[in-house]
Length: 95
Image 1 (cartoon, rainbow, N blue to C red):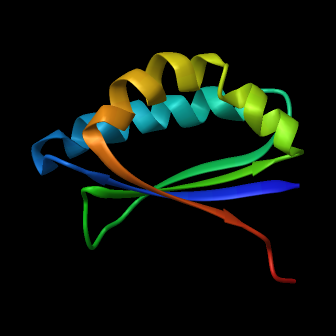
Image 2: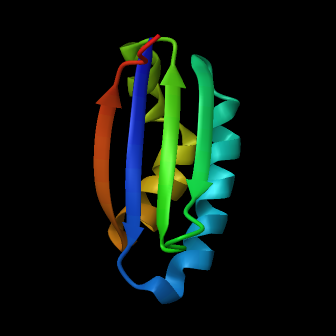
């Protein structure tokens, strides 16, 4: 299992609502991809310009394929990434 948590902070808080809608759509599309076990998008209630992506993929290969899919190439990479600070955290689940 490949798990990744990503903190995103919107550079201009005036764009936070638009980024939220883009992330909502990217999450919806990502959940339909082969190998996606879970893809959750959270918006901080304490800091509305902060978002958390929690991604669970069946494998590293599935995650790499995601980076070539529609959600990443048409929404996340061109429309979200230029407007946020990104903090990726590959993780393991402690059970």
